[in-house]
Every structure is written in C-alpha cells, then in structure tokens.
Length: 399
Image 1 (tube, rainbow, N blue to C red):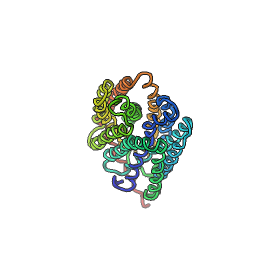
Image 2 (image 1 turned 90 degrees about the vertical axis):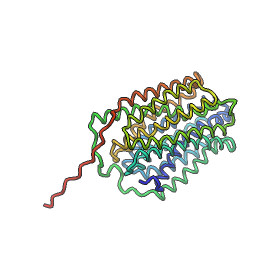
Image 3 (image 1 turned 120 degrees about the horizontal axis):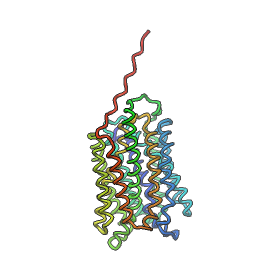
Image 4 (image 1 turned 30 degrees about the horizontal axis):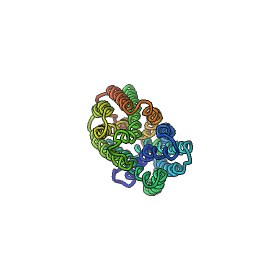
C-alpha cells in the first residue's frame, strides 16, 4: 500500500485519533475533577478500564482482523470511537465516565493489531511506513494536549470529547467509501514466508514481549503524567492551561519526528543495535529529569520523549519482519493484550504514586523500567536470519 493513498492517509489519521481519544482525559482531568469536587489524583483510577480494555481487547480484535477482515474491523473502530466519545461527553458522574471510557478502550483496542498490519501489506519499506504511522499517532498525542487545553478553557471538558467524537464518525464514513474491498480474509491468503527456526523465534518472541511490557509502562506513565508534571514544575512560570497544552504539544511534535529516523534505520540495520542506545538513553534522561525544575525540566522532558517515541516502531517492525501477513493481526493482538494489559497499571498507579511520593520518585521508577528494557533487548540476537521465501508450489502433472 502506498503511503500517499487515501486508504493509507485515513489509516494514519485513525492512529492519530486512537491516541488523541485516550489522552483527552489526561489533559482534561483537572477540569473534570474541579467540576465534581474531587482531586485529580483520585479521579485518575476511573480511567484504568479504558487502558485495560485497550490491551485485552487487542486479542479478539486481532483474531477478527485476520479471520473476518481488516477493512471491516477498521470501520467498526472509527464508528465505535465516535459513539464512545459522545457518550463520555454526556457522563453525569465518575462511574458513568468510567463506563464510557472503558467502552472507548474496547474500540481503541482495534487499531494497532488491525490498522498497522493493513497498512504494511506489500510495502517495500515497512520500517519507514511504521515510523510514519507512529509519527501520525504521536501527532495525535500532541493534538490531544493542545486541542483539549483549548476546548476545556473556552468550551468545557465535555466539548473536548464531543468534537473528536464527531470527527471519528466522519472519518469512518470516508474510510468505508475509499478503502478497497477485501475479497479474501488475511488468514485465507497464501503464505508468503516460512517460519524461523524454533529456537530463534522463541528468543525473539520472549524479548519482544518483555520489551513491549516495559516500554508500554514507560509510554503510559509519560503520556498520562507529563501534563501534570509540567503544571507542577513550571508553576509560577506558566500557569495557563492552554499555554501548558501548547508546550506539551511542542514536546510531542518534536519527539514524534524521531520515529521517521528510526523507521529508516530499521529498514537498514539489525533491530538490536538500534534499540539498545534508545533504551539506554532513557535511563539517563529520566534520572536527570527527576532532579530538574522549571525550564531545565522542560528541556529534559523534550529529550526523554524523543527516545520514548523513538522506541515505538521497534515491536511492530519485529512482527512485520518475522511473522507472515496471514497471522500478523493475531500475533500483534496477543503481544498487545499482554503488554498493554500490564501497562494499564501505570494509569491506575500514576495518581496514587504522585500523591504519595511525588514526581521525583515516579521519574526514578521510570529510569529503572528503562534499564530493564535495555537488559531485555541485550538478549536479542545481533543479526537475525532473514526469513526465507516460501517455496513455490510444486507443478501439477498433466496426467
């Protein structure tokens, strides 16, 4: 699929929308808490259902993507995100908000195991395609910060959910019109590659799963906590929510560009030697950020987010390189169910951890998690054998 085709553009827009929806709450939580007379730290656990289902829902979503069809599942994704966003905007209290966010997590879980395998089908440069897709997703994070800050300030937090909800419904209708029909589900297509040796594949899958868990924890801690971290450590320098949203959007926009560079490198070099320095740099930068305040903290945040976002293409690149297209949605769904299911704890623990120990402790914990990622990746083979092409079918005898 060409990166410039209408379908590819809508798939990338879907990735932006996926992350935008899941981070509206993190930016709007202070306004919601103020309206309901709660502390924002006490309101954060109500969103854990969204992130649990974002992970666990990947398992059935990936299976349906391979067996039923990726096009159909993406239509369900767009329409479901739109409806759930509108439901959140109508929530009268904390528990109804939690229920609507959990439903949003169910539909959000469709994108990664379905949209990315659909996007990389038959592309000659999967690393760059994944990097471009990752850039789109992280621009969604940046837009979430600035758009939500603006809408909350001038129209209220409910509008901050309703506007993206309407946009998702429009994009879903466009996708249904322009995406080519799938006449054969991916699982029923001819095999294109043969499997790697079992020992190599087991090692790759183990590293992939462990690294996915630790990197997902880092991703959730940072993207859900950065807004409040800036508000606390820039207090007195910048207090306007909209301005803080702009500052956060700048961080995410600049950091997102790292994925294009990493994507190009993935197409050229062994994955291990790309990912090791990325994970190792996170350790140093989180440790430095733990002691910083004011503008030095902002600079440290920009630096560590470059490496957090730069790590994103790694796992998807492994799946594309070593798993046949017939099974990519299912394998992706399985690893996402594990990694995102576990990392949803980050969302649950964020508020209580900051309330009890502060952001300094949280940043030190993130440095330790990044160190574990570095250790996991060190066990990846330096140069994996490329999977061989599947043998051609034997000629059929005329007699």
